[in-house]
Image 1 (tube, rainbow, N blue to C red):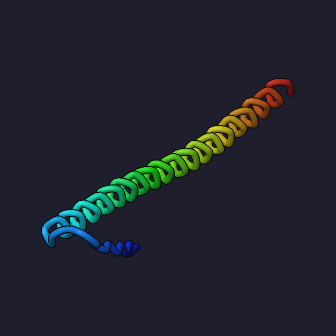
Image 2 (cartoon, helix red, strand yellow; image 1 turned 60 degrees about the vertical axis):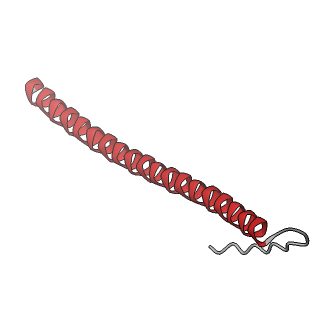
Image 3 (cartoon, rainbow, N blue to C red; image 1 turned 180 degrees about the horizontal axis):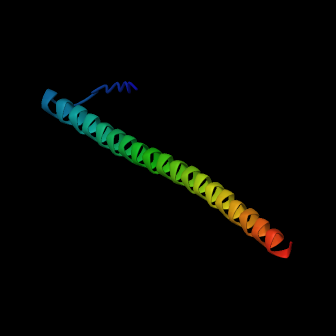
Length: 83
């Protein structure tokens, strides 16, 4: 991402012009870097949430499978006991 800034000094010394330029550049880079950092952190957090929810879903699916198998085995035992 490139941000171009043009500053025209109508009145003032070169020192004032340079100070103004560096102030604006510093401000832009601070805003940009903090925004990007927040974006990256939010992105990482989002990815973690997505991954954890997928893991939970997979775990829940596995637990349901295990429960189903247990029920099937119990039902088979009940059927065998009734015979």
